[in-house]
Amino acid sequence: ASRGGSAPMPRVLVVANQKGGVGKTTTAINLGTALAAIGESVLIVDLDPQGNASTGLGVERKDRRVSTYDVLVGEAPLGDAIIETAIPRLHLAASTLDLLGLELEIANERDRTFRLRNAIAAHAAQATGKFAYSYVLVDCPPSLNLLTINAMSAAHGVLVPLQCEFFALEGLSQLLQTVDQVKQALNAELAIHGIVLTMYDARNNLANQVVADVRETMGDTVYETVIPRNVRLSEAPSYGKPALLYDIRCSGSQAYLRLASEIIQREKRFRAVAA
Ligand code: ADP
Ligand code: MG
Picture 1: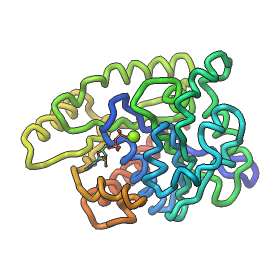
Picture 2: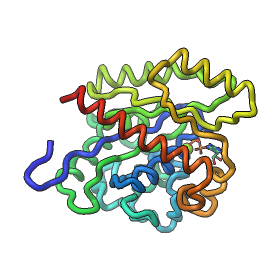
Picture 3: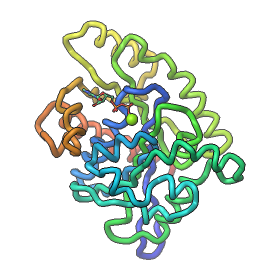
C-alpha cells in the first residue's frame, strides 16, 4: 500500500526458465520497453552474469560501475546501480561477470535468498519521481541457482518464455516445482504470471502443434500473445537497442506491445483477487 505521497511498491515480475536461448532476455528487454512505452515506469534488473540484457540496452561493460553483484553482495544500495536508458521511463540495473562468484560468497549468509527482495524494498521505500517504479522485471540466468531463487523470492509473478520447438515443455515441470518450493518456503505471494510462447514460425507445422499442445496442457496460464520468430528481434541487441526502438513496426515489436497490454490486464485481475 502507498504511504503519504510515496509511490506504491512496484510489481516484481521475473522472467525465468532454466533453459538457455528460449527468449528470456529478449522478453525482458522488449516487454520492459513496451510497458514503458505505454506509460509504466520500469526497472529491468539483470541477474544473468552474461549481462545480455545490459548489452542489449546499450550499456557497455565499462559503464557498469555499480552492478547487481554489488547490490546482492551488500556493498551498494539498488539505487546506486540504476542506469537510465535511451527509453524514457525504462531504467536498468546492469550485471557483470562478478555475479558468477556470488553464490559461493554469500552461501553461509542467513538472508542469502532475500538479497534482491530486500534491495527492492529498501529502494521502493524511499524512491521518488522517475525512480519510483510500477514494474520491476528481472532477467534470470539459464539456471535454477541462487540468483534465480533471489529473483523468485522477490517476485509477485513468474513469466516463463517457452520456445515453440519440439521439446518446449521439457524442463517445465522442474521449473514449476521450483516455483512451488519458493512459494512454500520463501515467498507465499509468488504465482506463475503466465507462459509466453516465443520464436513462433507460422509456416512450420510443428510450431503450430507445439502451440496447441502447450495451450492444452497449461490452459489459461498461456498468454494469448505469441511472439513470432522475427529477425529484427535478434538484430536489435547488436545495436544496443530494444527492438521497439530499432523498428517499432516489425512483427516482434508489435507482439511485445500486445503482450504488455495483456500483462496489464492480467495484473488488474491479480490485484482484484488480492484485494
Ligand atoms: P535467453 O535469454 O533465454 O537465453 P535470448 O532472449 O537471449 O534467450 O534469445 C536467444 C537468441 O534468440 C538470441 O540471439 C535472440 O536474439 C534470439 N531471439 C529471441 N527471441 C527471438 C524471436 N522471437 N525471433 C528471433 N530471434 C529471437
Ligand atoms: Mg538471457
